[in-house]
Length: 197
Image (tube, rainbow, N blue to C red; front, side):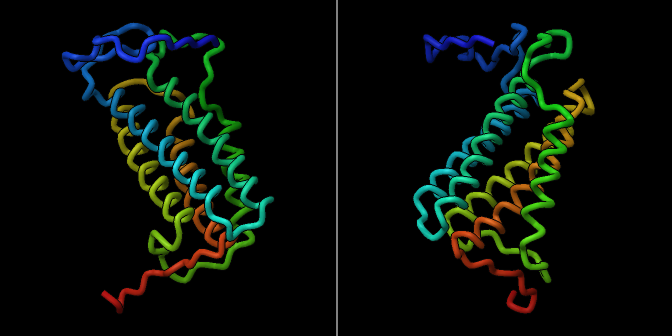
């Protein structure tokens, strides 16, 4: 799939419309645009988590590199997911990268592996603690929003077979990654205490 970007602006969206991959013009506030726009926002937050992971020196280099590799892979998968959402079913190219069941299964395997070494939770985790964990908690909440928007889109238009399952599982992985990152970076993990409200 060759991509060439030689112009940053086209003026094509100046009147509130944009083009899908197949060339169809749609309103910028449409659910399809909101869907892949939110996935793009999620990708940007994962970029912030990667920077925080690189800049925080509390973890062993091997753990930092492992987290960075997972987040980089997720960023690439999110571009595939965004491409899938930006393409109507009839315009999908046979070799177009899309999210598949194998991607969902890999997320599940990572959740199980990473969660197995974490302490059992006795309450909800308050987002924050440190730069890496906080960025991953933010990514988790943006992922949940993407899931809500794509669910609304899927009630009106066709979306890829594994898009919703992928987003659902990804938010779970981001939660586990936030806890794992807190552990490897020695960031505090504060639990919700209803009595302190």
